[in-house]
Length: 228
Image: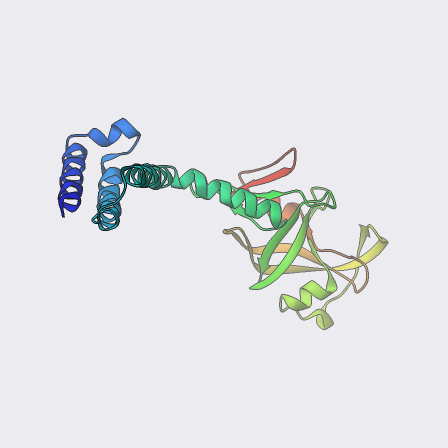
């Protein structure tokens, strides 16, 4: 009971410190520090329950050190939650190439270079999930015949009368308009694109008719950044 009373006094002292701007001492704003106080109170009460019985002094000291470390980790995790989220996103991007890493502050969308050396970009085209290869050499968006069908495009009604150069040689493509393209929350509508004839292209391409609508796109080392 004594420990629980001390816990309440400590929490009250923290609340008073927050009210007088003391949270700034540990790098917290007043709102952030105020949110931490209830968490600390709960942890202190739990610790009080553990220490309510008589225990050897050495065990009590080691327990206090452990709980102090838990308190410190909890405060640090809350204070740097934005940075931790960013790090987690980067790790996720490394493990899953093509998955967009979205910066919540700037809105910038980035991708990590895949093992193939290309930047694979996962997109949603007309609501269908379609992987694209970043290619500034493509003057327009280009979809494979199969991806166009996934996107709900009637390929049987297309006229493949435009010659295009692909990795497989010269092929034919049909000009269309894509209703929507969504890449990491960057959405564009009515985008001009080409549909490659069957077998003319292995992978759909993220070309200039999308890239030129961005305020900025850049490649730095192994990272591709797209800015709305």
